Length: 146
Image 1 (cartoon, rainbow, N blue to C red):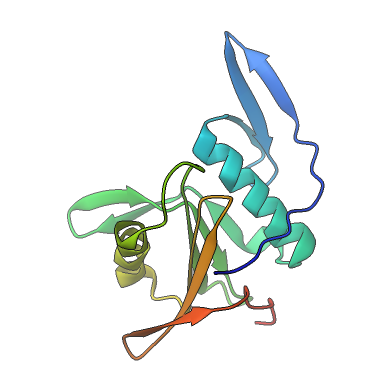
Image 2: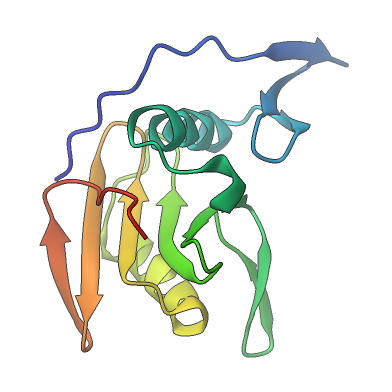
C-alpha cells in the first residue's frame, strides 16, 4: 500500500440549487461534489502539489472507447510527449479496493497502455507497474521525470 500525505487544501465549494459543487482546477469548471469527486479532487492536489506532476499533463474524466463500449477514466497523467503514463482509478472512501476495482483500471489500460496503474479510495492507495503482462506492486508513486 502507498501512504499518501495529502496537502492542506481549501477547496472552492459553492451551493447551488441544494447541491454542493467543487471547482476543479484541472478541468477549470464546477463539478458536482460527490463522495468520489472529493477523493478525486484531493488526489489531484496530492499529484500537483506534493508530487509536482504538471497539471497541464493531467486529464480528468475523459471518454475512451473500449470495443463498442464508451468508458470514462478518472485521471490519466501523460508524459511530456503526451503519451499516457499513469491511470488513476478513484473510488469513494467506503468502497474497498478489491480486484474488480483493479480490473476496471486494467480494462482502461488495454487502450491506454500505461506503465503505472493506481487505485485509491482516498484512505488507501495501491500502485502497480506493468511489465510484460506482469504487475509489480509499488511502495510509492513514481516521481514525474518523463
